[in-house]
Image 1 (cartoon, helix red, strand yellow):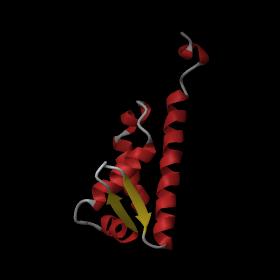
Image 2 (tube, helix red, strand yellow; image 1 turned 180 degrees about the vertical axis):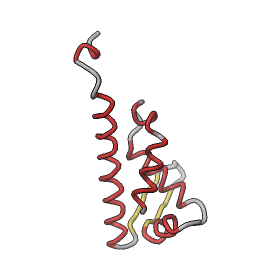
Image 3 (cartoon, helix red, strand yellow; image 1 turned 135 degrees about the vertical axis):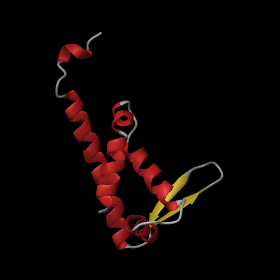
Image 4 (tube, helix red, strand yellow; image 1 turned 90 degrees about the vertical axis):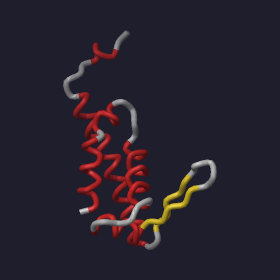
Amino acid sequence: MIISEFAKFLHHHDEDIIKNKTTCSLLCAWIIAILEKEPKNNVQKIIHKEIAYAKNSQNEFILIARSPSGQKLINALYNFALSYEYHLMRKWLSDKNSNDFTK
């Protein structure tokens, strides 16, 4: 359910990923956006319960799992983000040949 919501978010940002925005940075942005507002659905409630967020004055941040299940959630989202990026790049490269990359 949570990965499905994240997948929809990534799908809306396919062009950003192709233009060199990493899925890991999008994952952080998605989680932070959820944590900075009141939860409205079960996915957001679970993220609020399982993940903590802290930010300092230089806008550096850290995401922390609140429990072992939060660790599994962060790991699953991270692994999904990487696999989605690989999938999208493989799809993008499928119709390219080596001559497309020469100067």
